[in-house]
Image 1 (tube, helix red, strand yellow):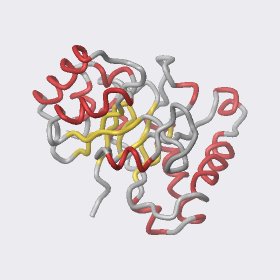
Image 2 (cartoon, rainbow, N blue to C red):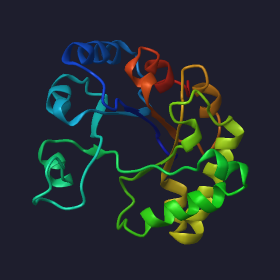
Image 3 (spheres, rainbow, N blue to C red):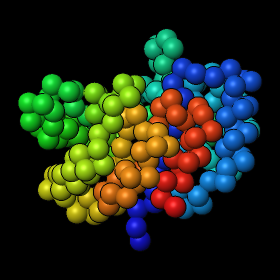
Length: 216
């Protein structure tokens, strides 16, 4: 069975209830490709509200979490708290190189080091999605070409094969983030090792539906 395409919309610190109602309206109108898993990352103060109005074919994620279940950590949210409120996903980290690192030919070195730091802490990969998000493409309007992104994704999959196991290499979804738009999503989605997208600003706009449907 192939890897199910995954599109995450990270709203970041955006949205009033009125604006959120508008976003949910276009998600409901869609139509969204039924073969794509869609998740939106919501500011913590709106998690319960958004969960109550999202359509059934869109899931919800927290945007941040802390490593312990409870304690004297002002402002933090634990995985246990998210789970207790029916929030199944959370954004934890992404991997990606800076422009100077890419230009110095250090992309693989950087992303492998970052991936190892995360992989060493993971006991089960069943519900892990890995996001490759080159720093130079975040919020800059620049994006990796489909070929550049595919090259990194392919090498990451090979790294998983050699450093975790073959099953994880074949099944873990590696998604691309970094100025993904309705204009470039279709070409990115054609690459065999790009299993979806982590979308920032574009997830707040109706064009997000086109990004979700990029595989069609």
